[in-house]
Image 1 (cartoon, rainbow, N blue to C red):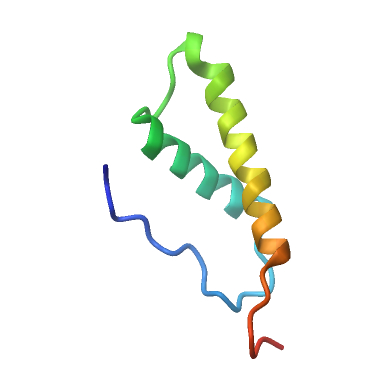
Image 2 (image 1 turned 135 degrees about the vertical axis):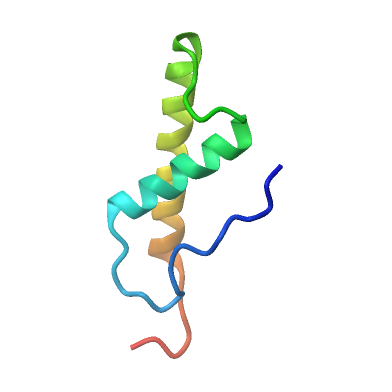
Length: 70
C-alpha cells in the first residue's frame, strides 16, 4: 500500500471545508480498497465507506484540542 499519504492541513487551521474532509475520505477509501472507481456492484458499499470516513473525520476534527491555538 502507498505510504505517501500527506497531511492535508496544518493542525492550527481553524476552518476545514466539508469538501476537504470528503476529499480526504475518498482518498482513504480509494487507497484501502485499491480501486479508484468501484465497479457498479461495489458502488453502494464504496459510497457508504466514504460517508462513514467523512463522518468519523468530522467527529475527530470537532473534538481535537490544539494547544496554543487562538
